Length: 324
Image (tube, rainbow, N blue to C red; front, side, top):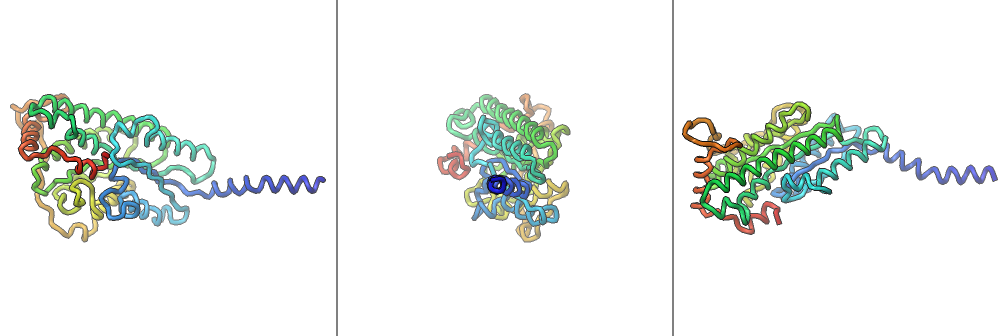
């Protein structure tokens, strides 16, 4: 009986021991959050050629993770806004739960070590969505107010998200990807208004990520894409193509390593066209601005151009961006 009892005890404990061993052998994690860019939309094969997949592939074979291995968990959702990111039960909550679960497991090397986040593009697209005052009225005031609300939402939601991620994962590397103008250098009549919107949104993103308490790194793609909308943007006119995703992946890796992005020569082979110059809202003393620093005259002019160009966005445009 004692021998039988011992045998049964060992038999019952074996699966538990094996489970603990398997858990202990799990690799650290790269956690990705964001919208359709992080999903990989625009790439010919999003699961392998999207920027998250590309960055993961490089990390997994790097000197740092070549021996320990690295897992990837991509929680991104096409069409997500900053409100969606922060919503109860959304990506952020799922990320916090994943971080806590791995932290509490007690298994060494099982933590979330790298987090990337891109958000805000769909917030801007809401300005040209059905019901937006920017399309329903030629008056600049309602549109300026809506633009200010969008910038505030990005700022508040991004700040909250990064604070929660930093609290949950004090030692993790967190990289925030900024926004790019898909029309830059194309000559499209939407280029000017997109340049203004993206520039203002990136100013908000930069202000948030500059908080030293958050200890956040950035993947600055706005300047990399400047003038290359016809080169690195997919046929849908919005998302990056394969080369565009490769550039974003390199920017993420550069952010992780705190270095300058090194874009391969073959991706730079086509000479970019000139893009719209950066907006200087303080250059004209007669130009009034709202509380968010948006030049009213310039914004009104951009909206007028948009109307004259007939860019009331079609349903196909929203499908391309992943909002449906």
